[in-house]
Image (spheres, rainbow, N blue to C red):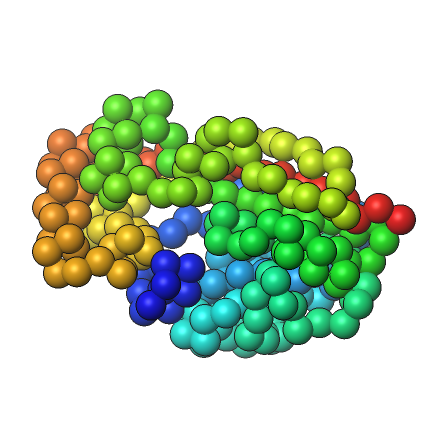
Amino acid sequence: MTHATSFGAAAGDYERGRPGYPADAVAWLLPASPGCVLDLGAGTGKLTSLVAEIAAEVVAVDPDSAMLESLTRALPTVETAAGRAEAIPLPDASVDGVVMGQAWHWVDPELAAVEIARVLRPGGTLGLVWNIRDSREPWVARLGDAMRGSAAEKLVEGDGPRVPPPLADLERRTWEWSRPMSADDVRAMARSRSHYITGDQQYRAQVERDVDAVLADAPSAHGEMSLPYVTHAFRAVRPH
């Protein structure tokens, strides 16, 4: 099992533990009045459900059948297909927008950029988005350490993603917000991460102990804590 295709083994924890996205951020990722949008690396549909409120049609593509099954249970009217960014099962110039939530860091940028440009109509957009916990809060930084960090956090909080030609004019925006979560929600989030899913029993047990130690001291009220996030969004255009 590779890290990029491991998430189906924890689809339930992924759905419970991972946050959705701010509606304003999702709208910014898309062209005006989009007809058809491809959610690439759609997972359980966290981003798909929000895109479906804006676009006339959404197609969800993911390499993991278990994740697509979870998405279909939640969004039975959304068309799904198995595929990946380097080999998209759609015709040329068939979509107005492509979005990817928490996914670009898993792809080959050179191959993905060419393939995404192939399925985009001229003037269409590629929208990339990541939810990153706001580690300026000390207890959130400790939680990140307990979960062993991720490549996505290093990429997004650094220079950002590299989107090669033929896509152009990469723009960036951020949104700050908070998500109410129970301790069990946070534990599900920890179990949904690729290093945990692919780790051995000893590794998993240590992560669980470390997360529980952070939760024991985390600020909470009425059984819930407020977990701060920064949503990092990027948008590139397929030239005419």
